[in-house]
Image: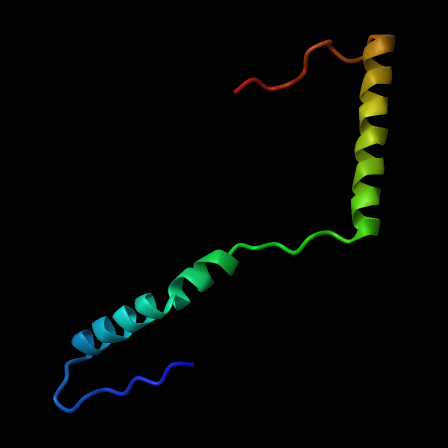
Length: 78
């Protein structure tokens, strides 16, 4: 934690500009931006479960296409 004290007769706006400049120079802002939206990796069990689930759903969709209960092309085009 960086300790920056407000100077005598310094306005709050100039104090905040000085603090932000110091944070920018130290690289703390970049560190925060990098980890802000970081998601942890899934565990091996969760990865396996999601893979098995997607295979199961794909198999069901393929079966429904074969028996004619599902239209051939159901994907959305962007």
